[in-house]
Image 1 (cartoon, rainbow over the protein chains, first blue to last red):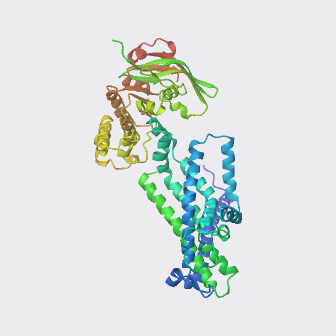
Image 2 (cartoon, each protein chain N blue to C red):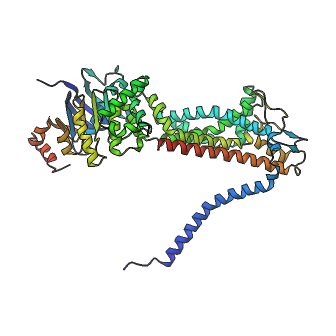
Image 3 (cartoon, helix red, strand yellow):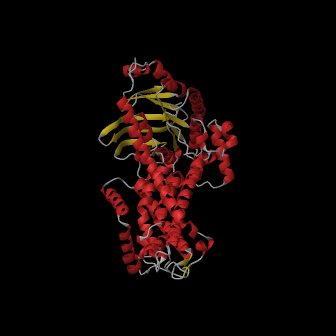
Length: 289
Length: 253
């Protein structure tokens, strides 16, 4: 006769299962609370005027159009510089480098770069890009600072994506008489592309929300006109929230504007993540990986 | 008439770090014949096969000594371009490994990396290769479908077509049917018998019936050494050595 499951084990199982599942649900619930909180406080601030006009009346009225444009431009500089460098590094590390001391040191460097606080990147960007390279407070300096901060994420996710390409593809290609570079360019990279692009967009969406790296390097308190060159400074969404909430002329009165800006920022980040997910699943479907 | 020797190795030793995987192997491969390499797991037959198109060089910390010749060229000579060698000595792997691309792009891959750009020429090569690999009728209406939609046996024949597309002189096959069901295996075997009219085939197999069915000559490997090589009929019916007889009659391995 089979033994009955003991009361103790049955309930222990249930308790452990419950604690695991509630931990998982907690994440979802936290997100919902944040979004709900933002929406309930800031939704009335969202209007076409808010999205399409510059701030007015010492930033107590008007919209956030320059901030949206600024964040967009900063992100563009970031992805244009960080993606090629990140992917190239990942290709070197995963496909070419012979494992050894040097590679271990490089990898340690990348991992530590990922752990550097964002304000330190901001100070570095100020000292290096703005002052040494004489870029001043500008889109290009801010974007490059964000790029350095995003690089470890892009390298790590690209490496992961390259690693997940089966070695049999590489062998098949090399055995056909393809050179190593042909193999990487025609076989490995296309197969790794979904993973690379997903990682890049996730890294970028993180960068889009950062305040500290751009507050000394690319973003300004208030700029009534849109930038005309990469060497102009811009307003940016996260910095705008920070400014309104800490240094605004009338902090209480601009609360809805702060929440409204936060909603736009979060929508932007969600949008990017959504694009990453859709892109990945579409390419995967096409390639049947 | 003596058959022409297409490929041969002389006193080939191969080391994984300090472990000697192949020991003093001298073996000839006749043109337009298929040679089977048999032996128990770990006897070095797959390692030997990889030495014939220098795929062994992809494994770090290995060393090879002795000579491998294709026609009259020493393939390990320092001025030989490994890319041109691999275009002449194609390879089919144990597990079907088509690229995650369309059927057409899989077969066209070799010609394209060889610099063929003419679309109609490519179409011609793809059709010819797929016909040679006896898979044309099954895929001709869906050349633009993803190759990974095919069954395992079809994938393997596609891989053979892919290898044939660059007109290799020698085709190395590393247990090409071991991951396939009996019917797919039969198709691959029929294909091998057809292909050896046009090129030289060297096939590693675990399956002795398969060796008997598809090969003209058979070489028996054991513990990194070449024990015996002969015409397949002779080797299977009248082996010279007791060790070979024990293996082919199933007493060990």
